[in-house]
Amino acid sequence: MSAIPEGPEAGSTSPGGPRMGYSRAHMDEPLVRVVAAGDTHIGRREHNEDAVLIRRELDLFAVADGAGGENAGNMASTLAMSSLAHFFEESQDDATGFDVIGLPRGARRLSQAIHHANAEIIEMARTADRYQGMGTTVVAITVDRSVGIVHLAHVGDSRCYRLRAGQLELLTQDHSLANDVLELAPNISDERAIQLPSRVITRALGMGPQVRVSVSTLAIVPGDRFLLCSDGLTDMLDEEQIADALRQDLRPDATVKVLLDIANAAEARDNVAAVVVECRSAGPTDWPSPTLRRRPGDPTDDEAELLIVDGASEPPASDDDDDEPEIEISGGSEPAPPRDDIPLALAEDDDAHPTQEIEIRMIPEGSASKAKVEAVQVLLGGITAENRPGSERDPTMPFQRRCKKCNAIFDGKANMCPNCWDE
Image 1 (cartoon, rainbow, N blue to C red):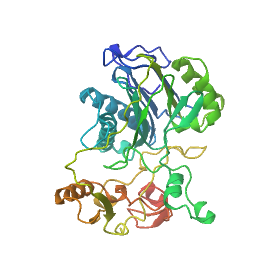
Image 2: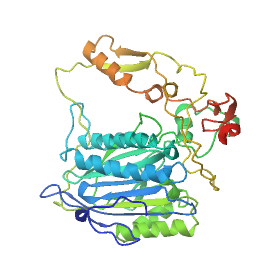
Image 3: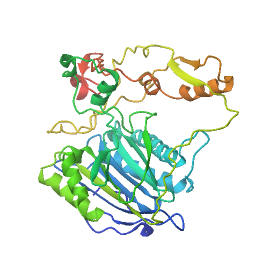
Image 4: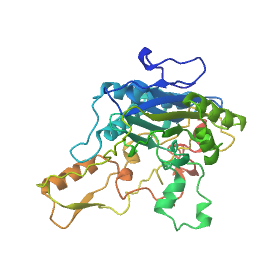
């Protein structure tokens, strides 16, 4: 089982079985009591690159699905889980309420933890050739039991479902090439669409110094059940099968076992990971409606709306790259033999993250102070071009690359063409 060990106060783990237990209260009278369990299964793969995180004393739960071949994928997912836990251990415990710009502090804390994990994975990849190009998806939730809300964050195609009153709802949207087409190029022809590579994700930890984390804050209703899972589970089970498992009157540890057993019986091609988090009422029966987001109300604040526009209509052309690489987490039904010498992503260099001139246009014109415009420019100046608002990569671009060694054009995600791999 790929999981991060817990301390003695975090509960016990039965050999070969999932983790399970009640959360400790941060406050004397929390509204929510949490029971959680998680486990992984290797499936038909040679290596288990999935990992789960159950830290009840931190109210932190997560799943990661690594990639990279040999032990690199396992290293990336395990490092992501340990980094999240360490960040929560070391960061301030009082992450309730809202910050100065109206964002929930708990949501920012979770996003910060994922950014921190991304930096640690990139740093680890620099230490050994076998770790070059390793990456991982992540989906994580943290429960604020004092006010009855949950913060959810994810990168990649690991998912979060919620079962409420018997109805299953998908709370995340895969960061995949298919969804990029839906958002950026819905008019693409079938002829061009069929040429696009399948089962490709467009965001993952370890792929670059900047990562876009999708974050949301949701109210909890007593009885809510959250499922965090890797695509190894959702590839084998449809949503009705997932809902049926979550509807059963079973503890989270038994529910996890049911889900993994069904996937295993279906001869899961990929590693499978699942974490079930059940939220029960621990406070008064008159459950309050929490405030999920606050709009800053400083009457002295100017009322400008800023429209952020990249100065260049397209990123500067590069002689070395035709488009940014993506990483393929699941591949086809028959995974290719892992190779240490073929990185999944472009090696870090200045050409991999082009910069652009930033133009800020104010609406109404001139309504924002100069300091605020400069603050936005400073913020965007530290974000790579492909991660800035309005500058997503066009998914209709040809998926070809130029070999870093012989300069030949070829199809693929590695930095060297097949003729140069073995040299």
